[in-house]
View 1 (tube, rainbow, N blue to C red):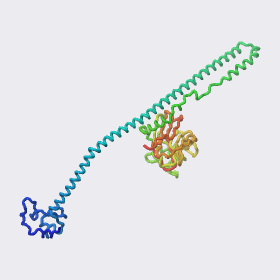
View 2: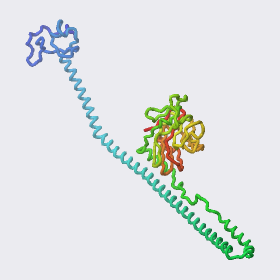
View 3: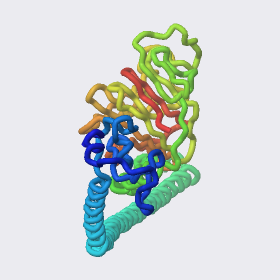
View 4: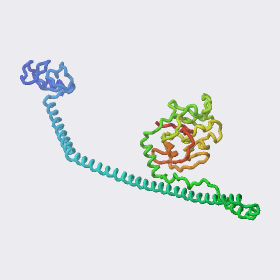
Length: 406
């Protein structure tokens, strides 16, 4: 409704102050606020809507009509709130108790599953423990029996030798020349009998075979436990003085990046590898158990392992190439081929996928070197050896980058 039509429909304007005392009045004209200005969103009087009024040209509605519209909206909103309240009440009284019971039931099932599975694992571990202890006991008894057998054999041999020696001494001291000549054959036979008793030889059967205590199951569980906790992870850093000029070392000394062009800014020194793209860590290990992780996902050509400090650094020969000498033990990758290498012996490893990270576990008490993939929880390779001295973590990379994880 326009302002003009409002003025026409109202007839003569009442005098200021002539409206009902109970009605709110326009502060400007003193008339009842019976209209609603849709533009200014407020109640106005008829004078405000007339030509010359402040709401001239605005869309004007009866205030009563606007109030009725608001009442209808409030009613609709109340109905919506009532439906919403009913829905929430139903959810609280019917759904949540079911959810609560479902949580209790599911948690109970999960608890039983954990207990059941760990019970099976515990039972398997106890069975494996008993089996291995029996094998250790049996091997110990076998070694003891072998030693006792050898002791009895050599006691008998000693008696024979003593008897032969006594006989020969008796001939030497109590027999005249003629009798000595007559006993020549007898002396020859006794001497030949003594020569038939061979000197003792080293035998593996007299030693305890430590392999009897090894178990793939125990190794797997042990490695998983060690790498799962990572409480003993070493803070391994690379020794800058050893880094090949074909490698770039990061500022934190944990990342090696291969560069096909030999760096000219790299000062040569007795500790630096000058041909193969190798590098040693700063710290060596002589005892105990040590763990470190290497991120290898970006490289298709790398070597990770341990090496003795005596590892030669110069030249292109095998004596300074990781895995090709007696000084180094490494896990290596070249394209899609993986192997464990030591002293020129390469053991292929049939991996189904390329590891993104490689865990190295060195247990010097057990004289064991283990390589592990954290993502799958799989032991990739184990090697037992009598390591002759302190071992350094060692690295080589001929493609992209590898990084020590900390």
